[in-house]
Length: 243
Image (cartoon, one colour):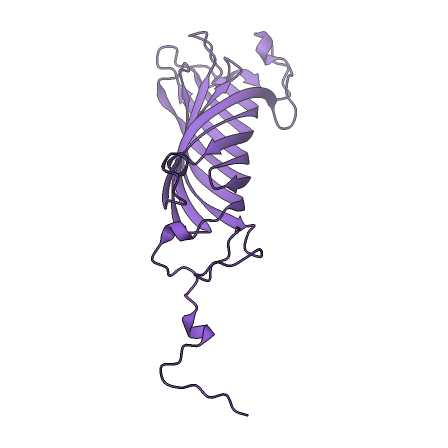
């Protein structure tokens, strides 16, 4: 027998909506997901002893778990920055590996109790480890001190060999806020501002103000959600979701 289709007949294929064509965004939450992210941008030291050209770049990758209201993320990144103190004419070059775990909340969804919004604001906090390698240069451009390298140069005790191949290990406490926009339920772009309290006064190689250094980053990035609910059930719009 040959299947027959009559004019006006609605078939299952024609009735199904395209995956991302829908009138009501709130009907499409991803309730549980793994999140993969990548971001990059500017890095600088706050409250340090440099007042000229104190900036650099940062790049971070992330792997996390997210629900409708909250999530956590493991981040691993590389940062390189430098600067100069115009009063002493000393300058520095710092590079470090930054690893951390961050906890965050989806503030707009949590407050408004509607799921989800395309735009969200996510404050976050965490702890981490910084692997520091810093070189301090004198006004003539000669190396004055080293931190995190296998160096035994004379002078200040900070010069002694305290590092390994990846540098001197420091504790960090991290805080920040992220603004993100969902392009489709699985993909979003974001702008993130973070600052980290570093358990050292020597991240920039100088200790003039006798305060621990703070490192800030302003990064842009994108993330992909691996939906963990797709195979559980399907709602009446044709989009998989958990119940």
